Image 1 (cartoon, rainbow, N blue to C red):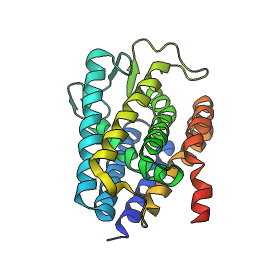
Image 2: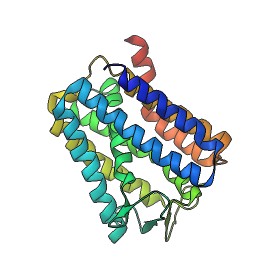
Image 3: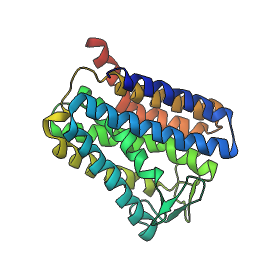
Image 4: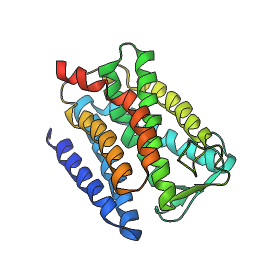
Length: 247
């Protein structure tokens, strides 16, 4: 069973490699498939490595919390700004594609596990994990807006070179990520301490960063988001490398 997360990681990487080589409906299908594989990977790893409490805590905080904040966001414009989703990502409930809260679940788990390696103490880990998760959105939102999967009604002010996504959205991500990681750390308790067997999730975290920089810079014609994400997500991700070298 320990090989299952590695197998799922391989499937996810293959889907992401295929993404920039496709277009239209095939690309949208690969987007949905990537999220489904990713959430299966994270939840499976949580269950196998830390037990039922960790798996339930991850789903309860990231999936349900993610859906709640997205539904509030679509209805009120808080905390991400006024936006709406197209119909390309599958069925919606309260205006939110069901795939969206699964993306929060997929990336919340590796973000926390990486933070346990680079920070000591609950508060420091919450901040590092939240910063890393929020910085991932510097890649995610520009890419998804460019594909037409969602749009903001008033996307200003925006980061230089990254039109279509208001700066307030990133601040909203950071705020919710802090709440999410706080809830996650308390809900799971000691299950979130550093343990052996986290290799697939740490590899996912590093792959997500490196492949995002490469894809935006080379394949997706989004050089500004490659630069912003490369610097800011790199600040959360790259300190993991010397820690892994020591262990």
